[in-house]
Length: 97
Image (cartoon, rainbow, N blue to C red):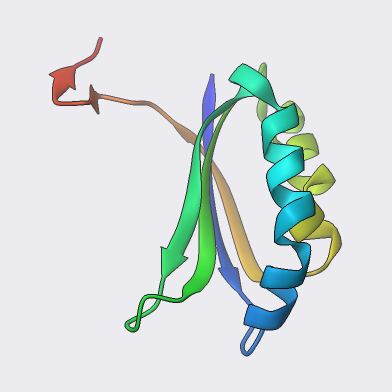
């Protein structure tokens, strides 16, 4: 089952995001196929202001464990976080099941 995380950064936290980013990227690489996609949300001037990640996990608890282990979460980067079930319907222009 897939889960989507939308996480909005705390105000004025770009320096923290940039400091923790190398550890965050290492963590994402370690997830292998459990990470479907990931990337930053951008503000009106193109600077990162949050994150969107899609996880493949057995259940919500397993997805939450991946969120909790992320260096961004551990650094308290996010002001608010939402983790919801998710299903891909269209990918790369092709309709899924």
